[in-house]
Amino acid sequence: MFKADASATLTSSVKRVRDRALPQSCFFCADTGDETVCAPCAADLPHLARHVCPRCQLDAANGEVCGRCLKKPPVWGQLVALWRYEFPLDTALVSAKYHHSFAIYRWAATQRTAWPFARDATLIPVPLAELRLQSRGYNQAQLIAEEMAKRFDLSVDTDAVIRIRETDIQQRLNWTERRQNVRGAFCATRSFAGESIVLIDDVLTTGATLNSLARALLDAGAMRVDAFVLARVLPIRRRDRVVKFGQARA
Image (cartoon, rainbow, N blue to C red; front, top):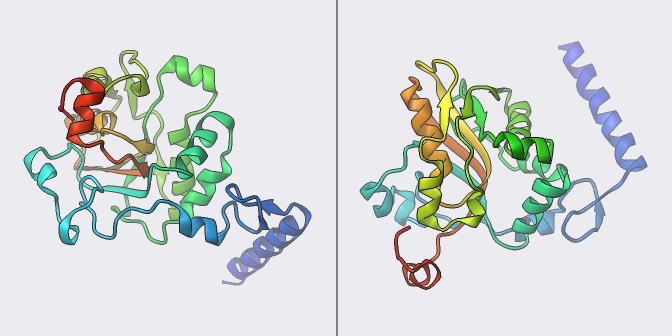
């Protein structure tokens, strides 16, 4: 008990010295403070609706499973997202993904006060294609997973799933092409018999990548596969999909 108290005191002291010597600026408004994102800016981020579907995190009456997920359930079980992928959060995540603003990931991990999945779950970050990993030098999903693992004392397995074929960059494709692009793109490297898995990524758009990963893990014996993302893209309306893609399919 004494050692734990002493360690906590030392950590607190180091933090006070660090904050005085190296004051932080809020990522969004640049005001000086103790956090990567100040409280007013954090409150103004695009939060999800009060009642969302536990399968897709879109609006749902009383927080129950929505009609869309009842009709066509995602392969994963539960999905948790922290925000909507809208300005200014989208700018922050792009900066983190491509310009090394990793403090956003550390701060984001602190925004969960409790772990919403199985306590013995293994975190699996969405793997990058080899060429993209070599070019970028890091996998943003792995960085997020590591921050969540430190906060909630969980384990991360970065070798559990591999891409068995190269895929096109999802942002270049329409919603239908995204599903086809990642279908059968992943393979588990070991048995997951009886394990609870949580897939980790920065942004969920159509869910095609997470669905493909979840299917590979369930095929490898996983007892349950859930998913955690920082932000959820709200799907465009059917009418707008027709205008943009020439078809209404999601």
